[in-house]
Image (cartoon, rainbow, N blue to C red; front, top):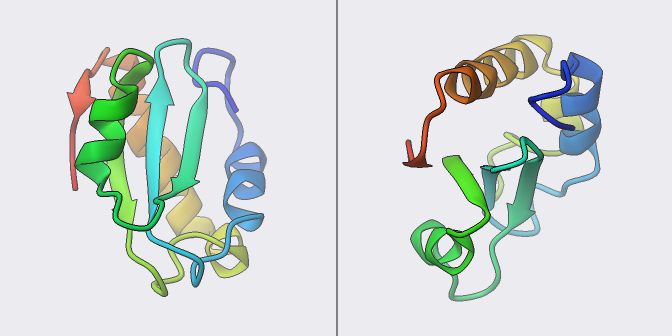
Length: 104
């Protein structure tokens, strides 16, 4: 899914669907080219350390989804309000040319 290429709700749903909310805390970031990434944090990794490690390729990082909270995974993918809200948020930030770590 790329924010520079008219992303759809279904693309975001697909990203969310394949993730396991019980696996780890997940972080959403957008690369400088517009690609949206949602990745699980590794053991002993924090959202800040993930950002610092990848800051050369990250345009902005907005969310940390705590383990076990259903913000990623199948339930999240089928929560149409959640998908709408999340897509609107990241598209707004992309259009505004936001940079850095925005929200945690």
